Amino acid sequence: MLTRRIQQAALIVLIAGVVAGCGASRPVTYYVLDTGPAPAASASPEFPISILVSRLSTSSLYRDDRLVYGSGAVQLNTYEYERWASPPADMMQDLVIKALRSTGAYRSVARLNSAERADYIVRGHLYALDDVLAPGLAARFSIQLELFDAKSRATVWSGAYAHDEPVTGKAVADVVQAQDRNVNAGLTQLAGQISQFLTSHPPQPSTGQ
Image (cartoon, rainbow, N blue to C red):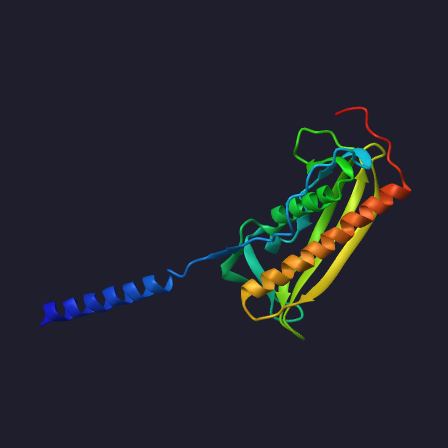
C-alpha cells in the first residue's frame, strides 16, 4: 500500500513538472524599429565636418531589452516575452546616427567610440519609449538631444521631442509600428533642427581627420 502511494505521489509530481514545463515554453518575440532605408553617402556634404554620437543616457528600464508599458499615471511595467532586439539605449544611438546621415549634410557621422576625431558630439537623454493605456492606447516617445562643440567645449544647441502616437489595433506589434512612426518623426525633426542651426552658425571644417 505504501509503495502504491509513493508511486501515485511520484506520478502527480511528474505531471505537475510537465505542466510547468509547458507553461515556461512560451517563445520570446523580438522587435526592431525600422525608420527607413539606409541613407546613401553624399559626395558633396553641405557641412564638411564630422559628428560623433554618444550612447544616450536613460533610466535602467531602457537599458534592458524588455518592452515597457504604462499602467497608470506614475507606474511603469515591462513585458516578459515581448522584447527589443537590442536595448533602447543602444538602438536609439544607431537611429540618431541614421537620422543624421540621412540628411547627407555631413562629411561623416559615427559612434563616439570610433577612432575618428569629431568637430561636434551629439549627446542626449531618452525619457520614454513605451506604450500608454489611457486615455487611449498610444506609443509614447520622448527624447532630448544636444550638440556639443568639441573645439569650444560648449553645448551650442539643444532640442527635444515628445509625442504620443495613437495605436491602431491592440497587439504589441501594433504598438511597435506606431512607435516606429513616432521615432522616425521625432528624429527627423531633431536632425533637421541641427542642420538649421549649423546653417545659421556655419562651422569651420577641422584640419584633422
